Image (cartoon, rainbow, N blue to C red; front, side):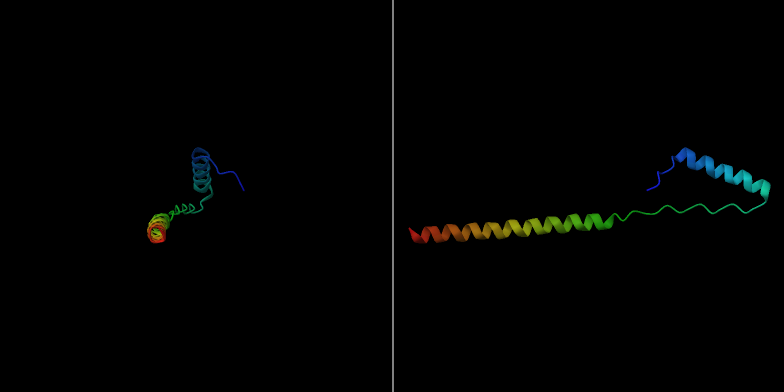
Length: 75
């Protein structure tokens, strides 16, 4: 993977290209749009995980109650 340019180096290259463009008479290159990170997916995933954990805990509690009842019956 290529090493990412520092912001300063990137800006310097941009300005250099602009200056060269002025003398050569070429149109300036369009700046790249920043990509937006998908944040929603992470939030949804975390919420689902929490729900899953809650369901598991509920199931475990039910199981414990059932076991306790069985033990009490055996006595």
